[in-house]
Amino acid sequence: MSLPQPAIDFLNDAADSNGALQPGAVDDLFELGALDSFALVDFVTVLEEHCGIKVPDPDISPANFRTIEAIERYVAARQN
Image 1 (tube, rainbow, N blue to C red):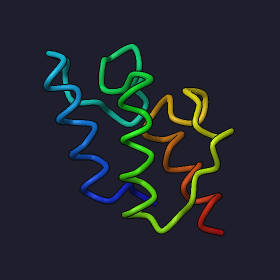
Image 2: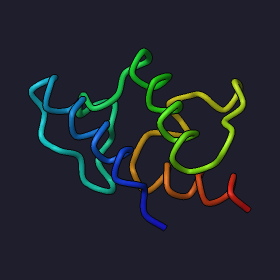
Image 3: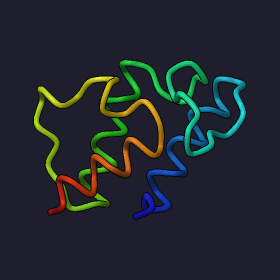
């Protein structure tokens, strides 16, 4: 499963705005600067809209969204 383009675009735009490289599948999105605690909330909205999932508030933590691979696993689990 790969993330929809709007989710990838969000991460790439956030990284660009912070002067970081575009993230790869295993890059730490928080260390890279593609996500922070504020951007994570907006990113979850993008995932919900484009992946057809609902992310419960307790799940909105860096642990679930650290890398693109982790996000893909999380989304796949929520879709099943």
